[in-house]
Image (cartoon, rainbow, N blue to C red):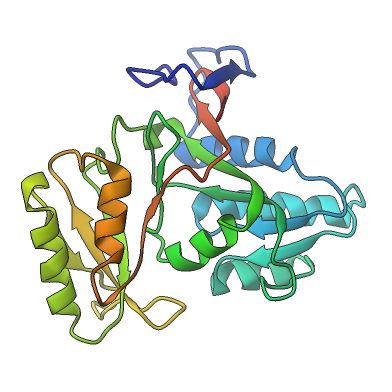
Length: 260
């Protein structure tokens, strides 16, 4: 399977960094994630303030940063975690941590994504950390997004999976109905996210997540974004528009880097 969208905007460049893998070699999705993550960590330099992402792909990057610190190949790194889970992981690896209050400017953030469109717009937050991720990644000079090729879509929502919206618990059904009505033309279905015990999933910020499932393209993403944020009760949504500066994609044909 080639790493490609049906249409590649002229403003983007794709660089294949690896020769095609032997047809007899089959890599799991997690192995592809690890390859992308390790490539992203090559952007890290000693003395940097780093945004540490959340999720199965970002976990590999955090592990790698911890390894390089232990080996002495990286020094004077400060990490800004995007979730309590990542904070726990980083502390276990000996990565020094801080926050945006003390480091409002971040050199580099590395994180995964649930969807990537041809313009490098992202859907994030299916792991539940979208608010902190957007705060941290919005404060960085460079945001490297790492994915396997299954995350490439023609348009956001195109995978048929959730577009998350973080909402306050108060009258969440009211907010969910507003969201459904807002995107009725896109065939929107809204569902409150539950945890593994069947209870309402609660974010690190004490909020709920309403997942949007779309049958059609949202149209102008900036207009859609603004409309969501105007709904009282919405905290943040999982569309990361024009934020990623680089996307690293791992697939059967190797590693591809796409830059803004």
